[in-house]
Image (cartoon, rainbow, N blue to C red; front, top):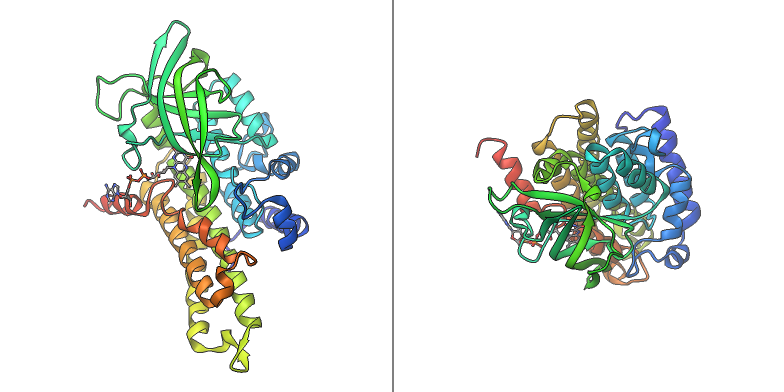
Length: 380
Ligand SMILES: Cc1cc2nc3c(=O)[nH]c(=O)nc-3n(C[C@H](O)[C@H](O)[C@H](O)COP(=O)(O)OP(=O)(O)OC[C@H]3O[C@@H](n4cnc5c(N)ncnc54)[C@H](O)[C@@H]3O)c2cc1C
């Protein structure tokens, strides 16, 4: 179903699709690039996408981007995930770049947006062992000392911190107010003395990390926006953040569907393709319908975000994130069931789709939290 993209965006979609088919169309190519492996991000390939100008599709031209917005980001991320391009760090890098675009100084924009467009991975560190869904409980401490902040604490679950050239660190600079006051954004150099990035082993491999910070000095010039105002700054980026996850998981969900469809057309039991049994045909029909609804929702929210850049849409942005991630998870679980034992084998892609999808309802705000936000928007 068409989501009403312009000719230019349709051409962009096609270019990404062609690139993905050429570069990682076969299982062997994907294995060589490391997709489905413990890394999920191929740095050389990501830089090539930077050279093509695709990563900066949603960033301003003066910093190396193409000047688009949320719509362009969604097209890029959906198609990249659909084509299985192993660029796991793209979403977080774009989230960081957008925060800098909104709140950074001119120097920060030149550095960080330029780096993002060129294909350098960036990371964002909010979560802590005792501050997950309750982000406002974060305790990592930043104390001003002359022309620097001295930071102590721990961050956890930080995606792609092991390869990030800069990390947007969200920490507490003042404890006197409410929990949403006194939070500050700083740009951290992960190679600075006192920083230790330690990988966490997960079902998805090594994509997340603990970060330990001990007396780390961060130059005051690396303050992003206003000291103590990071909560408001984070809220201002929520539409984009939710959409970035939604578009990526829409692509993954569509890929799980396409792989399952190809399999059930091909695989024969009882003398006929298994997809011709009504039990599977109806499943395919339901999934196709869910994915179309999801796609319409995601692109509609992207358009509204671009049309009203200053307006926060917590209800709609949460709906897009909730729907896309839950649908991708369902597509992968159903896909695995429809492929029988083959869906479980690492020789096929379905188990990788499942590993990607299953955690997407946790990061970026869990499904429970998204439902809470949506419910509250109705006055509950
Ligand atoms: C793969 C992965 C990548 C991640 N990447 C990043 C990153 O790059 N940067 C970053 O800062 N963080 C990152 N995170 C952290 C992620 O945002 C948190 O894991 C998430 O917000 C949930 O926090 P938690 O794991 O502490 O779970 P908890 O908050 O402890 O929640 C446990 C359970 O309780 C439920 N729950 C909690 N509060 C409520 C409530 N009020 N109402 C109803 N249910 C509730 C949750 O939905 C969940 O089911 C990542 C996590 C993962 C797994």
